[in-house]
Image 1: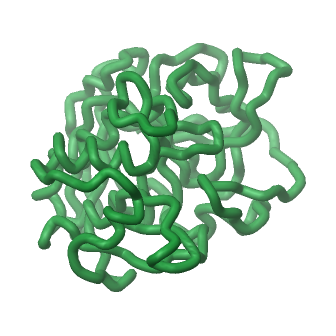
Image 2: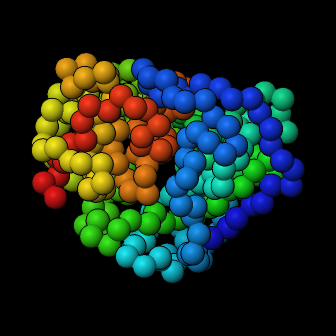
Length: 270
């Protein structure tokens, strides 16, 4: 595991964290997206090289009790702790996209030097400033031992991390929307054909209680089941991966920062 420690504190005003068509609570250092979730610790990752876009590591790791490591086709960078990290158009650039919030995860392209990490962000390059917060890079994702059967789905989903958001899109190589992303992952990662819209997808399968969520469950967002306007895939560790239409593209974030969740759907039959 490669951890970059911030060399200066980050202070910023609380703002609205938006996900597709819904608003999230205001963010602050100790509260907001990701607050209270377990940090990525207690594991040792032996990378094959942090500069490789493919991730490529050896896959050696020490998993916490009851967890297992799924080796990924890419290297990922997770914002750890409770402090956001600057997200910029170029290293040292005054053109900032804003903050990468705690517990969000990004696809690493390469180490850009001087604490900066080049990432894929909505189909283009962006840079995380490791000098302004704490980032952990790794090429595995920890899941409960019983969920390792969904490793192919997990690899397919995270392999598309950073892809462009495109309304009506169904191919991460070109662009996807939220339901197009779900349709792609379920077909290519689990062999399941899904309907096209988020509302249709949210109506599939059986109900799942939040405390029983498993990798591959769908999380639907909307004022009611009849008004679902967004959907994401649960990947464990309190996170979803989804096609985010607010300029972030395919990204990983905390699953329940939105409170308008009419249904969690078990579509894999697990």
